[in-house]
Amino acid sequence: MDIRPIPLQRLRSQQLEQTQLRLPPDVVNWMVAVQAQDYAGAKWSLGLRLPKSTDLEIEQSISDKAILRSWVLRGTLHFVTSSDLNWLLQLVGPGVITGNTRRYRELELDEATLKRSNDLLARTLQREELLTRKELLTILRQNGISTEGQRGVYMLQRASLDGLICQGVMRANNPTFMRMEGFASGTMARAEALAELARRYFTSHGPATLQDFTWWSGLRAAEARDGLESIQSELLHDTVEGKTYWWAASSRLFGRRQQSILLLPGFDEFLLAYKDRSASLGVANYNQLASTGGMLPGTIVIGGKVVGTWKRTIKKGAVIIDIHPFKGFSPVEEAGLVSAGKRLGEYLGLEAVLQ
Image 1 (cartoon, one colour):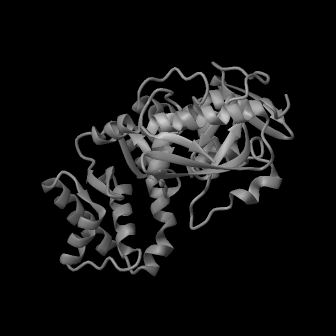
Image 2 (image 1 turned 180 degrees about the vertical axis):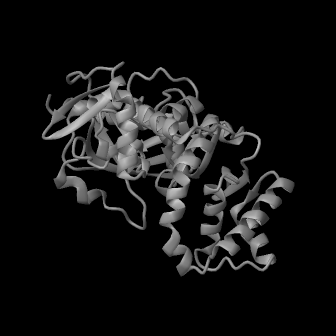
């Protein structure tokens, strides 16, 4: 096997081609967790995997609490389903909290303060079903708990990692929070959870390596290995350029097919779910995706390969799509880009203008 089929199979594994999914929660459930620090971009990640979906439909799923948002894998914000959030937090939350120890100390957040903020946030959200981050930080300050600098964010994150609260819809670019109690109750033994996470990762993201799974999950290397070893009889594998790739036995690798053209958001799982992104992104272009202020640009993907970047601007009932190719496009590719832009416009309910 060579490396060329890998990004093509990932397109199908990740439901970016020939998806059988119907609803936004189906996508999140399939992917296990969808990176979501960019709220609008994460919704578009779901929209790309549901060809006829709209932003309003996905927003409604979040409003209905069918999709939740919280700090999960690697301590980063993700979309997850209510049935998965609790066992995921039990699996990865303690490791994230331990990794935050130094930052807690720098922010003078000792365990007594964090317990007090946890209790206050939980009690407040028991009375008020949904409050914004701004409102919760105000309540912390009113109760004598400083939110200076990043203290407020780390207290909200800690209460989330401890399984007390999670996020819902955005209000004017301000995330809302709610109690987890009552609708996020799934639990698993640790060995079972490791196996479940590995099974669903290699099914929804394969072909991928153990190192990719370790990076994506944020687990310790030994734990990630245990998870893979517990389910490897369910997977197929092959070695490419000295690396072992694993994927679900229910799927198969295939050769080049149609040249799918996609406008992926900057934090889409198609790239970020792998430690080694060379199958889709050449080294020569990697620096062009360098983050600015923690944000990554959207990528243009043709046939599983990143061939440029893009960004959107909404103006007067239209979405302006600025295209920045790494090299020129053929007439067929240009036509495909127009179709991809039209799809984004339909998703947003706006006219799409490429430039």
